[in-house]
Image 1 (cartoon, rainbow, N blue to C red):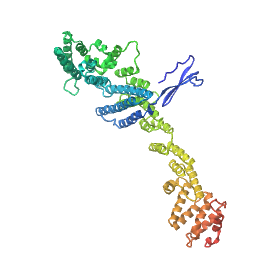
Image 2: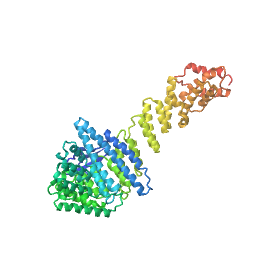
Image 3: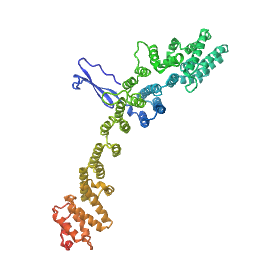
Image 4: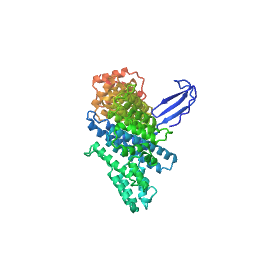
Length: 617
C-alpha cells in the first residue's frame, strides 16, 4: 500500500473505490473531484494476477461451494465436525500456496520478484495464523482444558524454526556442545514439547556423569508434568489437582536448590513454574507475545477458560511489547480474537489485508456456524453477503477468475442477482467460446435480458465479419426477429450473387427456429425446395415452390428468382404443375414488377412468357 500525502489546509480527501483498487484525490470542495491537484492509487489488488495465488482462489472456491451444501436443519453437534473439517481444508490450501511461493522465492534470480514473493508469503503466514486461531476459539470452540492443547498446537505450527535449529544441533559432531544446544532445549520447554526436551537433555547428561542425578531429577519433573486428556475419564477438576501437586513438587526442588549448581537446569525449573521474569528473559526464543501468552498459560493456568483469555492476552501483550511501540495490525487482530470480538477481527483484517479473499471466506464460515446472526448492515445486506459481493466483484476483473465469482453471487440472496447482472455485462466477449460460456451462465439463471444482449453483440460482430451463419445462429438464440430477417435477406442476396448457399448445415437444421420471422421461414423453406429438387422429388418440390410464390413471404427482389426456379419443372416432358398451379404461376408473373433481378436474364423472362407452358391454363 502506498503512503497518502498530507492534505493541505482547506482541502478535502475524495476517493473512488473499485473492485481492484482505491483512488484518492485532493479536492477543493467537499463533495467534488474538481480542482484535484493529485490522484493517488492507494491500493491495487494484484494477487488475482499471481499464478500461484490463483490456485488459492480456485481451490477455495470448491471448498466454498461445498460449504453451502451443508444442511442447516442438522443438529449443531453433527455440523460442528464438518465446519472444523472445512476450516482445516481452507488452511491446507493456504499452506500449500505458501510453500509453493517460498520455493519460487528461493529459486528465482529476479530480486524484485523474490521480494514480492516474500511479501506474499508473509501475508499468507499471517492469514493462516489468524484463521487457525479463529478455528480454535470460534469454530471448534474448545472448552477449558482442551483449549490450552489447541493453543499449544497453534503456537507449534507457527513457530517451526525450533525444528530447523534442532536438526542443525543433532547433525553436528557433538550436539551437547553445539552453541544452540540450550536454546533448542529451552525452546522445546517453552512449547510444551517436554519429551523432545528430555531426549536432548540425555545427551548432556552423558557428558556430565557427576551431574547425572541432577539431570535425572529434571527428567523426572518433565515426565511427570500432567497434560489434560479430553478423551480420557479424568475430569478437569481432577486434572487441576494433579497439576497443582506437580507444580508444588517443582517449586520444592527450586527452593531446595536442587539445580543451583547448573544455571541451565535452574532456568528450566523456573520456566516450569511460569516465572514471568525468566520467561521475558527469553523473548528472543519466544518471538511473539502470543507465544509468551500460551507458554504462560501452560505453566501457570492450564485450565484457563475461554472467557478468561482476554485478560491474560492483554496483560501478556503489555508485558512483552515495548511500552513505547505501537502494536502492529496483526497484534490488534489477534488480541480482538482473544477477546472474542469477531466483528473487530473481520473489520481489522479488511483494513490490514490486501484483498477480500480472507475476510469473505472466514466470514462465510463463521456465518454458517451461526456466529454472525445479529450483525446486519444499515443498507439491508448482512456482513457475510457484503464481503462476498466485494470479493466476487474483484474476481470479475480477471480474464478467467470471473467464472468463480458467479457461484459467490449465486449464494448472496439479497443482492447477488443484481451484482451478477451488472458484472456479467462487463465481461469482454473476446471469443465466441467465451461468449458461449457467459451465455450459458445467463441462460441457466433465466437472465433473459442479458441473453438477448450477448446474442445481439455476437450477431453484430459476426455480421461485420461477414460470417452469416454465426450471425444467424446468434440472432436465433436472441429470438431477435428483426435481426434474423436482416441476416436472412443477406443469405438470399448472397445466393442470388453466387448461386449457392453458405452454411448449409445451419440452414438445413433450422427446425422450429425458422418460424422466428417470415423471411427466415422463407429461407428455410427455399433451401428445403432445393433439397427436394436434388433428390428428384419433383412433385413435392413443385408444390413447395408454388406455396413460396403464393405465401407472400419472399422479398419482391426474389420473385423472379422463384419464377426462374419454376422453369425446369415447366420445361420437362411431364408437367409437374396442374392447370390451377400454372394459373397461380401466371398470376405471380403478372404481378411481378418486371424490374429484373441481376440473376434473371431477359431470356428467362421470355421463356416464362411463352404460351406453350400455359397452353392448358
